Length: 575
View 1 (cartoon, rainbow, N blue to C red):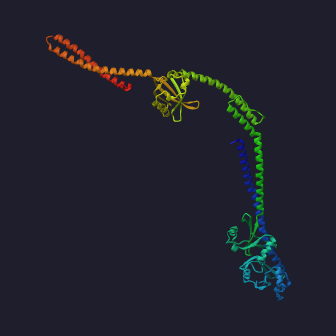
View 2: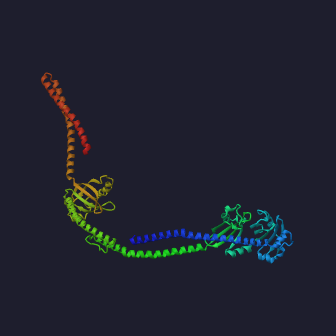
View 3: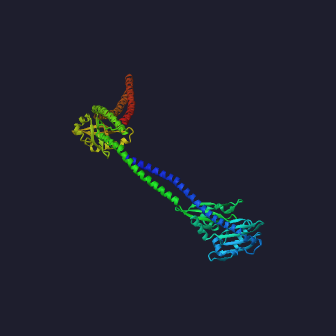
């Protein structure tokens, strides 16, 4: 791979790494910030829903306060008048005031008057028993100050109770209520500009999402609206937000009833405009980085290739040309004073050293070749260097010393055209092929064998060959040192003949001992027969004993000679 390719890859990898790092940081920081802002906005919107509902209840509270301040209501509760005020309000007023139920209680909690309104038909309606029961279960007396929600089987109901009092004390209380129905929900949606939904808490617990949002709020807590002693009203509605999909986020507010028990959940599903805009901005930012990175990366590669890599390429081509031509006297051009110029200067210095070394090595090579030639041709033994084919058979001669040319009867040019197969018998050629295997299994890396060389005149010369594999100018070759063993074989032949003659003489000598003893015994016997010549007989017997001892010594020598013959048979293969 070329440098500019590596450089391009490095720049691309670095740029991609930067993009990935920036993308990760952007996702973590920017999108995290957008998500935080989005969550804050969704939480604020959920709070707006709760505040809008609280505002409606406080509007009812203001209405109840106005009604509780009417003189005719005071007169009715104090017994000064039988007019209950409720009958004075027609259905249009009820609808305009947004009151579904209007109840009047005496100071002891007795219901004095009650009126329900059906807004759809604009007609009176019965006050449901569930409302009366719900008011009776509310904490404190009915005549106490109360505002918030009551859960009825018919649905959630906004309820406000205001005491009616004068200078003499508490006369009773009025209760006004309004259904938290579809109309009210649409009104809340219009006020908050949000798609408000009211979900009863009892049914919300069966939904996994909603039950997971408010798992810790199952127990009773602060009511939705609480009026302090200073008449300040505080709103208590826990708010939670959750991303529902990639495009939608949900805002939830938990509203408790007047007893502090979970009543309803206000829900609004809002588009994730901020987060989507953040993703779009991040995508545009990444595209801008990619485009800018590609442009700047391309410009960097072009400028780098033009200002640096092209000079390096030219320098490399020039150095390759010098190397292929082996012209170490040549030099590369040096331009400028940067690192590339310093490299070119260093290369010129190296070429100067190589030129000097080449001249020195050429002198050494000439001297070495001359020493090799003198050494190679000074040997009296035959030195043969031949190639080795791929099938391990010997190839042509590479070099033969003068002794080899003279002894084999060939001039140098002729013998270098021949191979081992031309100077040995065909059946002996395999000895050279087997020599490679022998060398591979030999620790000393060489093998020794005997073979007959054939001269140009057809004469057979017995040779002892010492073969060794060598590296000859990068090629596998065999150096064979062949020594003429004709004289040694002749000496061995004469030894064998001498040994055979000695063996024959020893056998004849053993027979001769027997031939001597037989006549000697006859002489001793004849001497004993002539007793009259006692002195002569004793002399004859004494001389015979001397001869017998000599023969015994000869027998002993023959036994010793048998040991010598055994040694000769063992070490000289004499038989």
